[in-house]
Image 1 (cartoon, rainbow, N blue to C red):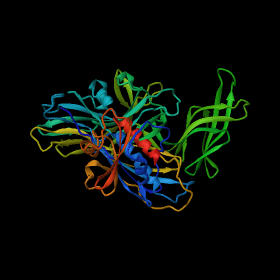
Image 2: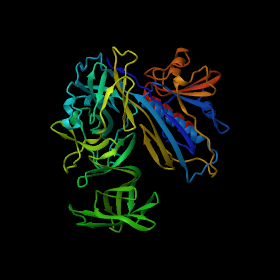
Image 3: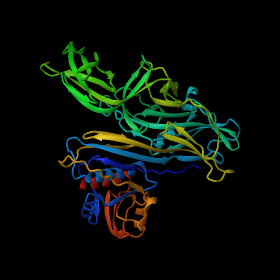
Image 4: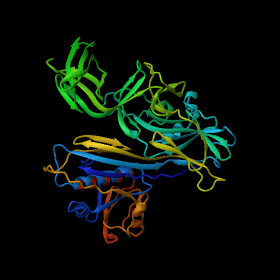
Length: 546
């Protein structure tokens, strides 16, 4: 049978100045003990006085909760800061394993003789991994159409997802996009296996909101947001004339008035003019002249109807629509500005050994293509392995996937009866934030809303680390503890419950519970609820209290 092994952790360290999304609004949170007094002792004389503990089998939601608290504590460390020009450096590390499958002793698919093969699928959401673990859905050009069947390895919790691909409400939907890992494994002999060229893929697929059917596949187009290798990107172009996909990181989204500019990365985006024809009729059209300038000089410009793109100097602009004021004096353009552009020609290597394709649907099958055709919906983006065959695979082998994940083989020290295959991630992402900016990485959104204080001297302190429950104990604690997650996901919460110090169940609401003196003489704050959602509500409430 498939057994689940999920291990997730986040480590967030900061230098210079550090902050996270600040919670707002009211939360229905049960407080037990003197939570306010505990909060006053989180930072003592400019130094962190807590360890923040997340469960070794926590899911990504609890990791995010710990990250929010960690980042807020980091913000409190700085008594002298610049409130006008602030920046943050964050390092987020996450690791997780999918379910595994025993290639030797499992009968879900039978791999008994040479050249038998099966497809294995993991995704950011287990329901979609289950859906796509079906060889009938893959055309032979994908090399994922395994002849002996397919197996879902469930949710890999650090794969990324976007729960609203239409963040600017340009397309009037609330659809989703998920990361997938897919590999075809072939039997060579009794104890050796192979993953050959073309048989390993990373993909991003979009689905209508909460529609876990093949017919629920959605389309991707410029202006939508998707996850890509753990971070969120805006699709800037899917050019049929050049057969290229361009992604960019959102810098600004909003409206620019005719004649105004927006500064980014030493460049300026200028709406030079907005012209209207057939005003007041059903054939009304707006034509926009957009420019990108450097040192006051135009380096690129475009005069076209919206929606359209302009990219130069490492930034991209997607113009969605334009209009004039009532007096027809000024025009306005709604747009998104991006940087960190990723230009990916189809059928060519994005990085060595990994080629880029768009995913389309033909005859109820997914097909990889390097040809973007107008009117044919793009269901997703895929990176396909085109390197050397991986043969003679045995226990301990780890097949790299884009330096982002891996497909692993492990016999659990029982070579005769076991050869487990699974996907694993152990990845680190860096975020550089300025005041007012945000970043989404490994399912965690972190924003630098502002920095408190009026001084300008920077203090080089560091935020505390979020540690795993297996790395610390109540008996060894040398400072107060913030324990994130209930007894099901956090060993310290489980121990406190067995001691009768807390009473949390799956029905519990968001709870902040202080237990005094229980951690080697130090206090413990349990931040938890009956599920991930209520745990996050408790975390946000504590951040707000801080």
